[in-house]
Image (tube, rainbow, N blue to C red):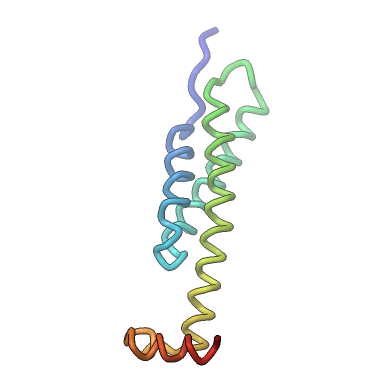
Length: 108
């Protein structure tokens, strides 16, 4: 019997990469891609576990899952840093570069 590709194996890999690349978009965009990649990877791995000799492309799924986990961690860290900066300095102060420079000098 001919092996077929796991469903969404390439998409999982691409979403895992996108979740890392977009971690600087306030942590939201990359978090969405990372969670989607993780959910799709878990479904694909369950399908592969049921019948491993039927499917090919499990390496893409495992790599995409690893990248998605890394992307989720990076995005959560960046999101928490953004929330901290807004709560500490205020949104209005973050819009003014001179004011934020003064505030950063006070914290040093």
